[in-house]
Length: 80
Image (cartoon, rainbow, N blue to C red; front, side):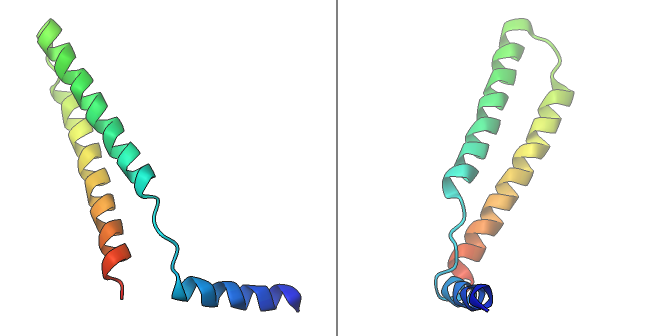
């Protein structure tokens, strides 16, 4: 009975004060992809090698991260 009571209390508390998203984690993911893209640019400038495939995959990954971040931010601030 005690665990049921704490579960109800937890749900009530989370409804009033919803858990906030991990904004620092999201920024860390974005910074990581930016760093990887910068490394690709440096590699291209140093060697002149063709990076189309790598660049395209990183751009797709960056787009997904951006979309996830924007969706999370919208849900966090406009879910009222």
